Length: 79
Length: 373
Ligand code: SF4
Image 1: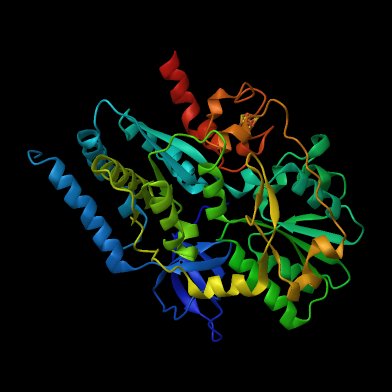
Image 2: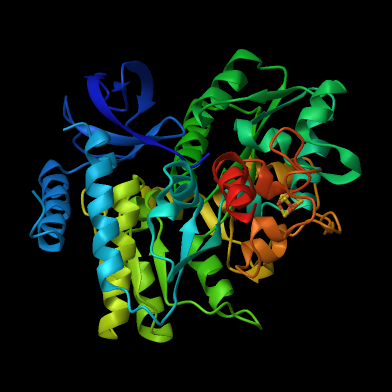
C-alpha cells in the first residue's frame, strides 16, 4: 500500500485543495491539501489519494547526470 | 521528464552494477537493511537483487504497514465492523491480513459485516456523508505518509459537523521502529540503512541523523525506482569503504532535510503519541505510534466503541516476526510457498506486495529454486 507513482497535475480547483493528475494516461482526482503552491504541470508523488510532495525537476536532472557520470567513470573503454 | 522511465534505464542499471562490483572489497560483506517495503518491492520486482555484487546482502526491514500490524489490532477492526449499523472503511491490503480464528476482514465481510475498500480516506468521509444513519469507521494504518491524509479527513469531518465518522488509528512511526531494530537484544549486524522514500518526503532527512551519529551507521535515503535503490547502495558501499557514517540523500528530487512542514504541523495538531503500541515482530514499543489527540477524542473509534486490544500470538510456524526483525528470510519459513501463498496468506508478510514474503514469492522464488536445482 506504500507504492506510489509520480503524476502530472493537469487541473487545480479554485480552492486549491483538490486537483486532477495524469498518471501515465490515467486521470485521478487527488487532494492537494498537503502542498503549498502547486502549479499546473508540476509533478507530484501521489499516495492514498493525496499529493505528498512535489518533484523538483532540476534535482531530478542532477541525479540522472550523476548516474551518467558514474557510468562514464566506470567504463572508460566502452564503445 | 516523466520521473519514471529515466529511473529504470536497464543500461544505466548495468553500469551502476559494474560500479558496485568494482568498488566492493572482495573479502568483506556489506549488510544493508532496506527499511521500507517500497524498496523491498523495487528490489524484487526489477531484479535489482540479481545485479548486486555477492558481497552485498540486503536485509528486509519492518517498513510495511500491513506486515507490522499485529493480529490483536485486526481483531479489533473485525469486532467493530460486526457491530450493527457500522460501515468499516479500509485500504484494500488490510482485508486479507490473517486474524484470530482463521478470520480476516474479508472473511468477516463474507459473514455479513459491512466492510468497504477505499482508495483514499476521503472516500471514507464520503461514505459518512452518504449514510448519515450509519457509523462509518475508517481503519487508519500506515507510516508517516498516510497519517497527514487521515489528519486532513479528521479536520474536514469536524468542520462539516459529521458526527458519524470515526477513526480506528494504527498510524506508526518510522524512527521508533528503526531504534527498535538497532536496540534489539540480539541486533542484526548492519553496515548501513537504505532510508525510506515516501516517509522521508514527509519527515525529511533530519530524523535519521541520530542513527549516523549514535550508531555510526551510514544512511542513504533512496527514491523508489530501481536506479535510485542501486545508486543508494553504491553510496552506502562508498561510505563503508571510507569509514564514514553520514546521512546522505539520493532522493533530492523529493526529499529535503526538513520534510513537509504543512503535513508535520497537521499531524501534530490532530494526533498525540501513544505511550505504548504493539508491533508485529517487534513487540510493544513506547512512543512508537499515534492516537487521536484529546481535542479529537470524540472521533476516536477506540473510545466511541469502547474497544480494547488483546495481544494475540502469530501462527506458531509463521516467521514474520524474525523476518521483520531482520533475523530470517522468507525462504527460511517452512510454510513459505507451500501453505502460505499470496492467495492464501498464513502470515502478514505474504499479504501486501511490499511484504518480504510476498515480494520474494512473486518475483524471486523461481529464480532461487533454479539456482538451488
Ligand atoms: S511465508 Fe507466510 S507464514 Fe512464513 S513467514 Fe512469510 S508470511 Fe509468515
